[in-house]
Amino acid sequence: MYSQNTICAIATPPGEGAIAVIRISGDDTFKIIEKIFVPASKNKDLSNLRTHTLHYGEIKENGETVDEVLVAIYKSPHSYTGEDSAEIFCHGSTYIQKKIVQLLINNGASLAQPGEFTMRAFLNHKIDLAQAEGVADLISSKSKAAASLAIKQMKGDFSKQINNLRQKLIDLLSLIELELDFSEEDVEFADRGELIAIITRIEEWTDNLIKNFKLGNAIKEGVPVAITGIPNVGKSTLLNLLLNENKAIVSEIPGTTRDIVEDVINIEGVRFRLIDTAGIRQTDDIVENLGIERSLNAIKKALLNIVVADPTQSLEENINHIENVISNSNEGSKILVFVNKIDKAAANEIKTLEDFLASKSIDYLKISAKDNTYLEKINNAIISVSGIGKFFEEETFAINQRHYQALTNIKNSIEEVKKGLEMELPADLLTQELKQIMFYLGEISGEVTTDDILGNIFSRFCIGK
Image (cartoon, one colour):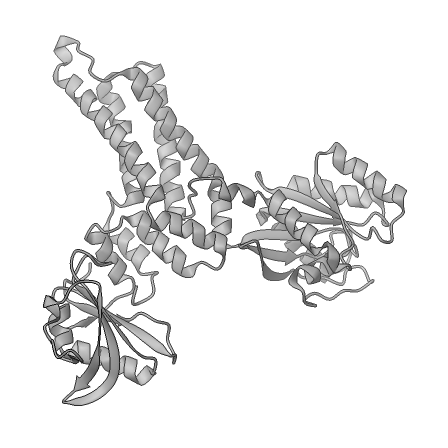
């Protein structure tokens, strides 16, 4: 897919800045740089310098200075790509950046394609495919939690588990294949009990990752949170409190919010995507009904549904709405009720609503959305009920749709192996499904892959990474 030429690219974001970084990688890295770089030490033979060292000098064209720079040397195999590599730290002028890249190209380098540096790291076995995807996720992470997930994957935590399980299957398959060679002698080399134990372990690992995929992906993209309730309970007031700005219109008139209002907040390093929905009620207003339809769709997609209840309004309407949210929520979605306007509601009104919520084992918090002193308690409740705390306890999350599909395939193959074991099928039939499990595990790590898959993954990277 990618050429074996020496490649170069600007690694820093477009535009002017204090400094910029230009990366070079390939067999001719040092030869090309030597043609345009004059080190202050007068030692132009970069290939003789120690790896991971920094050198000051000038980039020159026809004897004229283009810029004063620092050049970092990384020698094969001790570099990100596994090849001879270098980084030029120049001033952040867009002209200078482009000029240096053009000089590198004029002297034999090729402009890198998106993700080509990381692609070479994968092809040179510096990282596997799951780790490469972790690099992309780290670059695009928008919160502490998302960055932590990406770093775990980039460091190989996920890959180590895959390789461990895959190796155990390889060992067992080797013994089963040996049995087939001695089938006439009725010899059993592979312990069926050990096979069941390994399959059970893989199944538990797979089930856990599949179950947590929705949460892991939400942490990566931002946890979707729908704020719902009957009209005029304080949904928009709550949104404005969380955002610390007047994002949504607040009015005493029911039905003011006719469309969903979205924004993001960061709580304890976790990104939440808040969706303030239209109040759900019976109405003949066509525009308001469109907003209500969108509200129901938001409820179905949300990982956390926040219901704002108002004890000063009809208890029956509040309860009907809560039950409506429960019935429209997806499996695994959480519900948190904020009992609002406690500064206005009578004690008996609050108590009646509390009793209902307690009877349904629904998490709730009594608040006044107009009072910002409740903000810390509100944030803590969102973190607690959303289940994000689990993120810090789990070792591994699947946060990639490609991984999720492979895990689903592994799950299906495990079911076939279990059926085969129950039916006491011969070893040669069992090996087919066991090899399928190995294949899907290898798909995740990149042991098994195609050019189309690689092209799709690395094309999403920025140029220079």
